[in-house]
Image (cartoon, rainbow, N blue to C red; front, side):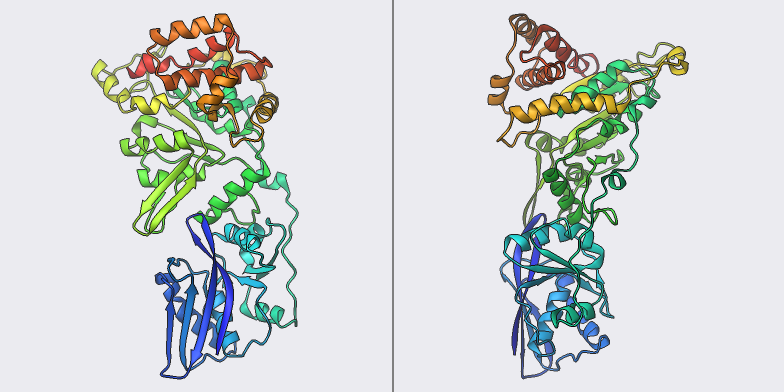
Length: 507
């Protein structure tokens, strides 16, 4: 007796169609699973055996062979439990109903309960693209699966519910949940809480408007972390495609918040400075997304930037340049998206008080140099905006002046982003910071005065070609915020001042 059941496979973010084939034949009792299964897939034999017995089904005392095709692709994870059980029920004639138009995803407990698994969203998308009409998923994964339109997502708590649906006795309603954006977004921190620091807020507004990377240098207590945590409140709202992209990463990583259908707020990831290079980029025997990919379409905030391991810092080079992280292992190569906005913060010296107006720095010149040498030139060159964060005086801190709220800043950011959306329409580029060199030449048109200033600054500051292009892209964002078609003198002058800290602290 023989049966075929559809399922889906997952390797990194790559999905593929899977067919679970079950053959029951005469011979000495044996249960073999073939098709390059990993340990979790092999262990499904015992989970399936116990589930069938404890749910009132008869486990076949025969020679059982289960093949998970395609046989040349390694299978990982516990989500093949449910399709293996359904295939055995069909092959042993305990389930008469036709299951050809269904796909099955889910891990089984020993009593037949269907447990949640990682990666349901990308697998449901793959099932839809393959023409599957309906897919059974664990009840706890129903919210993320219901995001996909054009396919019925059937959430089940127990295998008895799956069998009852297939036999037409008790149908499962397809999952659907109205997205309440406010409940997903929750309350966000506001720039109105930050006293003073107008220059830094301006720099972060430019960063948000153009998607530029940023580093803040300042003494302790000046509000670097406070402002970085409020950056999300002025970033533009994610598009639906961006939400799907980000949610897929969180689904694969098993980091999707309970009850969330989509990641509707731009991610803000802030790993501790002891994180390893693998923790940032991702990895493991079955490579999972790291902090860089979990910040995709959002912000990666690295506080105390010099204290991060050098290998961890240098691992940022390729993602910042290419927008992807590629992990190669013996089992294969996985590419995770990493279109991030990097925001870093650091002190000017080991004690933190170099340049403070009232507290004397106790560091030697050699100690300052060793501290600043922890950040390499290539990494600093990839960061667009370098901004110095000064101390806030008592009058500013205790004053009655109301600070500009995030909603007002975000409105300006949205207007600038709308200009960029029209500019890059039909391309994969989303913002000024991601312009190609060809686009930079096409859209960054300088006035004569602006061109003269940039020409003089290039040699005076010893700028690299990459820094030259980043200044042009920053100036383009500043001009967009000002509603100007051409980059004028004041736009390029403001952009150039944001490249000065590498000369003051690093060299």
